[in-house]
Length: 583
Image (cartoon, one colour):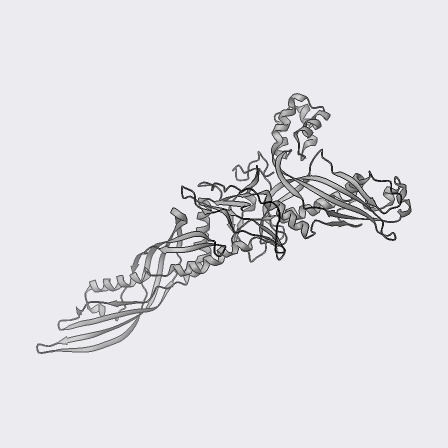
């Protein structure tokens, strides 16, 4: 199964590896130390009748001062291997230098041997540059159900260093070639710096954090980001990473029982110079969210007098309706409490819709005669689920038939239509036994204003958000179910009751779910760049293109922080780049 797929392009790989080196790895790299080293040099003359024998230099207690390896780029190889270049310049290596040796003094008749040392000095050569490369491997481990990035090797560093031999060293009594040999041996110690341990100390924590990014409501609603049927693969041109993700959803440990979607295709990674990643999200992910909210009773809503959704308090007073419904006369001193309860989880499905966004209306304004433009102004913001209802609306507005196709075709796009089955109960609060009137309603909404943002239960979670919009020319189908009000005669009054008392509140409840959104997999410390993300509804999935930025997930975002806004079909992004459509 895979209900979510994503592809990371070369720009995303570059961003991640650069951040990995410059931000996450740097504290570890700065703590690295070259290993100790023992240097043994040949015997050499120190005077006319003296020689240095068995000289041994031990370099220990090493450290690196001002060591900051910088990112030098990444090259992707076969099989998910990524070679990351590192370069550090103008730093010092600091060692304790201890030397022991034997002095040979010879006369014409015999030689004498004296053990010398240990002599201790400090050796702090300046390193002009150290160049190396680290090979990272990206894979998925099925036995542990985790992603993994491993350090698969470190290239032999190239080192250029300069440093004077300690002034008291016996080497200063010998030939310069031995000076150079000692310095070269010390420089070779730098080639054995253990970069692997630094990488392995950081990568497991980062990779394991992907699973936590699916914890939409802690302890309640969880998205599983294990690898799906397509696994982790790499394009033939070795430019990017492609991943299939199961996207299974659990409510309190119980998996969503909905039908598994057909395997979602894995997108092609964005090309060089493009966005960091491209993702596909199936309707399974959205419907699973609706199912979890339904089971958590987060879609239930009770509307009482004083509810902020009620702008006119009279709509909850029984006397407002008692003027037409005689059976309510005896309760005209009471108020209603409206209880809204979905009977099933809302179900979203991909289909064509006709959405009259500002961009569509602006485009039509340049293509139609002025008198026709005036007649269609009322379409602005509306969404239709059938072409016929668009044409019927244009006919009633007396728009000439020759313009009907142009007006319909310009607004046609892929959308997501949501079906719902809801019960609402009008309870007379203050009366004895709280008599009630119950209606059942089938309603249809369209999902609009898709964007990226932060979850509302946990603002560290990155989600795909959306809003519910009532479908035009398709009013709710409301039917009377029952009443405990004696002789109730308002069986056909459900539409009025609902429009006045329940519609606004229930849509607010749906939008609270949509604004929490569908979680997307992301590593700890990273976030989608909300403002330049593009979203487009395709046949069978929502396509997302986005850049990534570094954010601290340990710090919650400030109130009022900006999240992504939908980009109209023909609008230009602020940077001048054309974005994907946000429906």
